[in-house]
Image 1 (cartoon, rainbow, N blue to C red):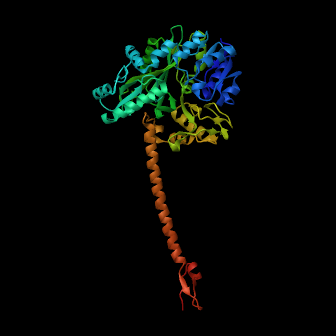
Image 2: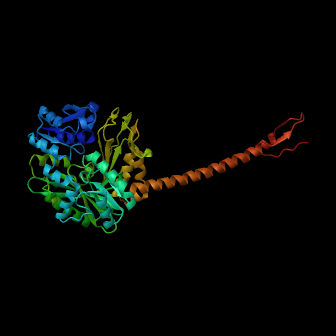
Image 3: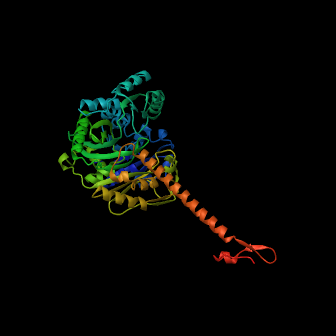
Length: 504
């Protein structure tokens, strides 16, 4: 077992990996930018090394500085977490060339599955169904027109070199294609340094369901079941569940087998996730992509299977076989996770950086909060605005929703805007409660809220009109005047007492 592991990341995932290191008796080493000098992951590490200025391109994305920090610290291995360099084959290769262990897949598997078009071909060769579309990047707008016409609109344009919603555009008609093609290429080039895009037929109201896979260097490949990731905004997940509310063990088995075949075909080692689109009506599923790293939403799988994925990652990186076989994996209860972001849901989820004035994290039975902040911590403008991941477990989905409501209501974050109010509304939404989920859920949810608010506003206007009419009537009744003997008029005390007054 390793004595020291350097964590090439920040925030809540760095803290999560440090906790696994502590339990294994391993010394966790942190790296940090100038903006993160007082960050929680720095405070919790045994050692911490400055790797550059605040912008990630000058710090957390600097391969040579991270490897140098590992050498200085005496770490034998590097865990990349997720994001930043986690799926960068060049980084994995540089770690290996430096005589260190990369806690993740081999760079060759990263390169194969990191290209979405290569991954589609590999999945197809492994016998997994793929969404109808191209398996090569589009060479021109004209080719895009021809392919889109062949498959029929709507279609999706996607970056060939990456995911996370970057370089992705839904195209409803031929008229929209030129601008969408140009925008997708520009965004892909900016996000991944590669402007290539490919095209898929858009699946109507699909569920986004992923399968967690794990492989070791001894030929063992298993899956740990599915996660429901359909609730997304701007193609990024915000709520995840395990298992899926779709509740189909046969579908789980078929998708799991397909995911294992894909992982074997890629020569995959360590933790990874195979993502699928699933038709809610036909139960047909299509390979979407493979994420060659630990996923943000891994806690829900841990809660339901009882398997510590980070601990298993470290063991496998040491050359040990998996500590479980496929028949050992069982799914108990239900888990749901909300990604708590420093964003303003009332302003199109715009980032809300700033200082956390007060923080009160929910606790109690079945509640887990993977956080990376503390009271007084600064949410930086330079990085992803995720504050924490709140996950709950219970025996049934209904009980998990009840527990999640309670935990969200207990959660207090002051000083910045957060997505907590949004989640509190979602977990009380009838469609969410019924499990009627797909990638268009948030759009429909926002529309329902707007319609409900319009009704409330209409009711409020009617109530105000009634109140105004009553007040006007009362005013007229109380302002009846009579002539006094000196010729002046005054408000009738009799009238104010509710009796009719007469002048004589």
